[in-house]
Image 1: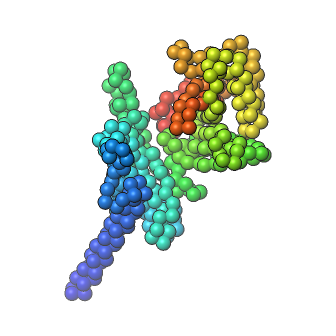
Image 2 (image 1 turned 180 degrees about the vertical axis):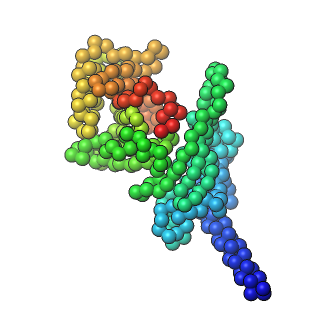
Image 3 (image 1 turned 90 degrees about the vertical axis):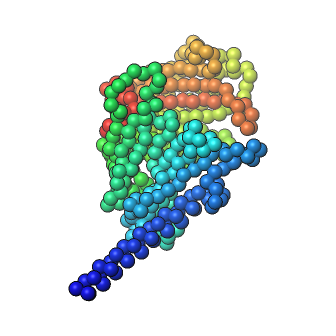
Length: 349
């Protein structure tokens, strides 16, 4: 009997010690992540240098039940809640993620974000359970996303999601049902003479999103930014900035000339040459390029193409710290589903 009591006591002490170890690991990781944001271990805010006002404040917390060996290397990893409380820490425009922190020799060697939500997001992600190296969660509709003018008393939408580590990244398991899931998501050709940087990550639909940057110069200032995403349908976006030209605001032929030049570059350097060639021919044949009713955009037009492709084009001016410029945004959409799927239809895979 005495021996049994001693064994039980040792087991309890071991469990308590392991619990303390987990708490210390969480504290270590949270402190490291906070320091990376604020450059301080005692303050959770960053401040405007001129006014001293808190530009943003952060909550970074963990949970012992969220510790698991996500990548299967034999060492505990962590799931961390990361909240940006918004301007002044008052929740004016809050946003939060969950961060999968992969450990190597008790040090952080990689972090992977899972979108959580924010004031203006479609939904909020809540963790239900971490079990068998998987993350079980519920994504529930944000009531504010319906808008003040919508009279809809229907229950909030929600979906159950499961996240796991695969091939060096975190994936949502139902995404494997998407026709797009197994597609080659590269956008620019491997034969392009220009430097291309590629990144594959999970977006706020919990789909794999390919992001690519094609650089025309060594300083990486002259570049095209491109993304590929989708589930049943394909959504390709391209963005490029031109030097500011006053004359392009009123000269429709100059706007058309620059747009055609841009489409031609994309045709030559992307894996979607035939679709872009068809778009080039359509734009070339237009007598005039549409602009929005307010006149804010130099060009704003939608052009239907063959094989369920559609192009949406916007050309407008912008200002940043380096001055003014002209931005061209081109979106190619291939809609193979029955009708246009709204956000929640797209989420229910």
